[in-house]
Length: 328
Ligand code: ADP
Image 1 (cartoon, rainbow, N blue to C red):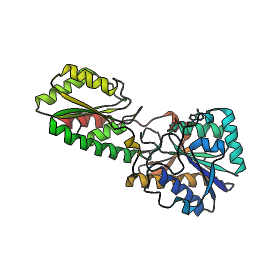
Image 2: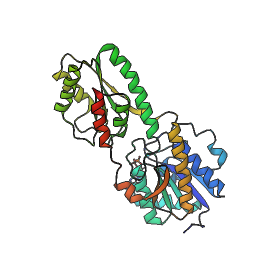
Image 3: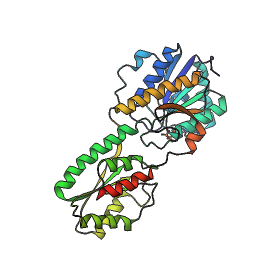
Image 4: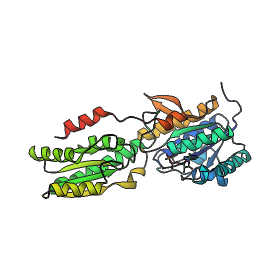
């Protein structure tokens, strides 16, 4: 069932920004154009819908952005869009611009907004997963994850150089409030002694046991990668508790923070974003709505948006085991 009625689409980026969002915007605009559709860019996420911040975009509006981090449309969190009045204003602006379909690039919060908007006004919507956390169901990877992972890995490599020179123990915090994908994979890639993630129940005793083992095998410096959302405690408390247990350790804490969101997207993210942006427009034209586009085993797939919101990608527990074996 194709949707021949779609003549004009709009694209926005919402929630936390992620490298590769620009490549996705470019793909949406150029795919739409190739099909003879009009395309508007909406600035600052749902705020732009509410305040009528629409710009007509053509293939040349998205030149030279495939390699740029961030999002040229800017992103925002919009509390007004969570109100019925805010969404009504947003729909008025969509009508004013003859918008027949909406592409939302963002995380599960943004998808919830898109779902509610679709249910209230019937406007076809499609979600494109753009978030560095990689925790969205319905796709092997989200846009921005690979870049963030590589940024974390490079930063931890540099920390390792100084850790080794001074026989230090470093606790390194990486992003991931609810998900440990960045921590687990950057930890494996940098040979971390231990990796603490919210999906796994950790204990201080286990961590201390790992330090004791490391001392026994003659490891003189160590890195522990901790996900932002680790349930055992915040990184400073973990470092302090470790210092209390091992007073001879020279312990340092590094919080990588927002560098992980920035930078030029990796090749994998540019390709993924290009596929997904294309897939979003083709999906809408094909009559799909209230779905999220994803890529699994290299194939474009569509998942009902409520499923993408409710379920989460599972962490690979085998990887945790592998990291433990390889750490000593
Ligand atoms: P992300 O998309 O990265 O998960 P957020 O959770 O901040 O980021 O969500 C982005 C935006 O989506 C919110 O600022 C809000 O405008 C919109 N949104 C989230 N939840 C809802 C909801 N229940 N109803 C309407 N809009 C929502």
